[in-house]
Image (cartoon, rainbow, N blue to C red; front, side, top):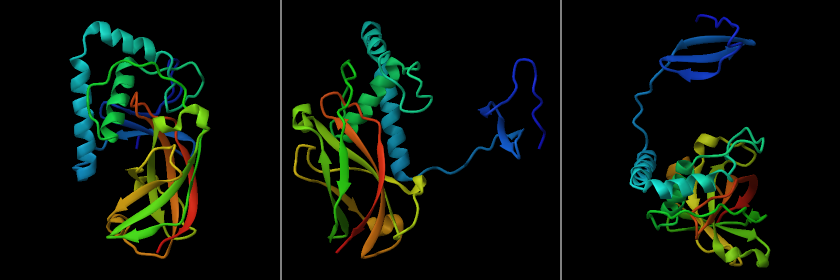
Length: 235
């Protein structure tokens, strides 16, 4: 476990490069040979990877002039990951791939056309008590968007983890579900088929950890997520 020695050019290191991974322990930086997992991934993960590959292949077919339009629109878009310094922005390819994934999630996979990224409206979402039906858990969600901000333009994408009451959130156990209905409806419904197989238990009450994301049905773009936790009953 060799220690990293700072130099005039680099005083610290993070992450991986080539076959080396840098890590920190007890305030000091070390490096080791990078590990390569042989885990093949779940069917959902491999399916998502296939979608991403199709998106990248589609980008390569976009004429250069249209790619420049995507790049121009992308300069107005902040990344969904830090640093949130209002200085960084994404690439046209990132914006295109985001739209491609969004339309796939909406069940309308196709080649997106360049669209300006418009700021998403303020919104709030809350879960209500669920019902069990034919092996699925159906959770109503109420989404609040001002009627003048076109709530009918948005669908609610959720990333959900079911847990025992009082248990904390484990991001690796969260799963994506697109809610049925539009955000202009009185309620939308998060349908989770096979929930017992996903999380391995059956309860009358659940701690639900959830991330809420708005999907624009016109552009395919998605909002920053909001995260919350709810204690719900399920019959």
